[in-house]
Length: 235
Image (cartoon, rainbow, N blue to C red):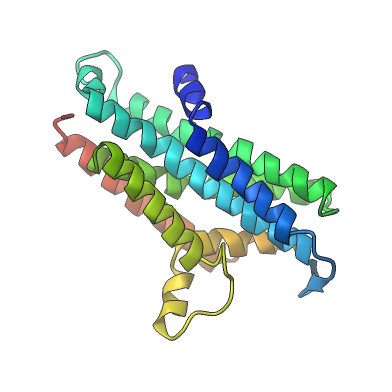
């Protein structure tokens, strides 16, 4: 686990796209004054950029290393070691969740210092807890992509899925989408996480619909990962 954390933190793409970029976006657009639906605009920007960092961190950390390990044949070696499937699976998921923290911390510091976001300690704690729990389906999705695609193709696939979910889910560009696309947006885990985060900072619990979307994606992505792992030859 320590090796995987260090390897991820040394990844320049991770440091730039999932820590520097959301912090920079917040500094550009998150320091607006005023409120929206009774909530600081700066606080809403905090949620959006924290979700950006959390979803990308989980996708890349959980899936990127697996693609590299497959290309190097390391997964074949794992299958003949005492490390069980459940232990390997749990380790990858824990890694994905842990790698959410640096980007979320960076955006939070920017919101506190530059955005002057004032939230009660309980709301800060609830938001962080939601982001950690809500990153689980993204970590599983990244793991599935890492087990399915190879090398640079896997990295590209993770990036494409990440940006598709951030745009479609309203993390970036939160305006309404035309026609059926708005309904599709409501079914994405990124939208559920953003709306759940907005509810938390407003002092409410996420709705059952938001929690249900995240839970459904977690179950489906987890099942896909387990099926792919069991069918994989590790090649």
